[in-house]
Length: 225
Length: 87
Image (cartoon, rainbow over all chains, first blue to last red; front, side):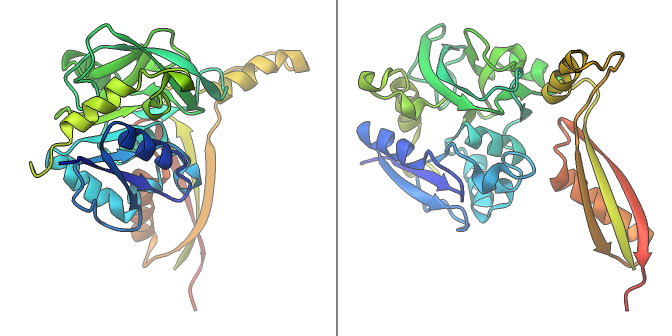
């Protein structure tokens, strides 16, 4: 049975089709979840994709968190469903309180569009289970506000609970503790700034996003909720 | 009663401000010396209709906490002045 991944579409999202294409290339089914519908349509996993949801007005993710679909995403996550926020999706998940901390403007105020090296720090998450600790993945980054920030207590908690799942090998944006991706306490919600869906074929420069999205599909087990 | 509200959103002390430090670094090249501690924030203005000042302040506090600021990194200073009585 094919695994269904719902990809949230806000006005201003722009990576939803890349995610759907990547999911299909790995044998899963991808479908759009419109932000104005208060349901996740019974999918097996949810991706909040990159872009500029609601124009990123006020703060990235600040308006998106009030979209009707976000209550359904929150309930899905609370029931243990796998949820991944990529780039703007990570910003939305922090604003929605599904992940701690916040994403600030990059340290040198530069929009970054490059391939970053990520080191896997934990394989205990819905996005990293098919990788190995210490593995270095080459994945594109494409952001202006990817500088992860949190209170010292939060950082201590993330470290002690092994919830920093990906770190930059060479920190591009000033993120505290080189953080590229984190997970929630239940390890079923992951946010990251890099774009694994843009690294699914060597022809595109890297296929290192494949084990990450493969992990998500592995976690997207139908009818477990 | 209608109140005019000014919300001044600032990054919390200790939170790095890349915009502020970039402005600060550029000042000496423009001939401005001796300026330190540049911080960039947001200024949000609106009007609110409420029963009294207490009620207005309570609603604006809630609005700031839930929407206008991200409490992880930002603080808000709220100025509230009476604009007049509704007809």
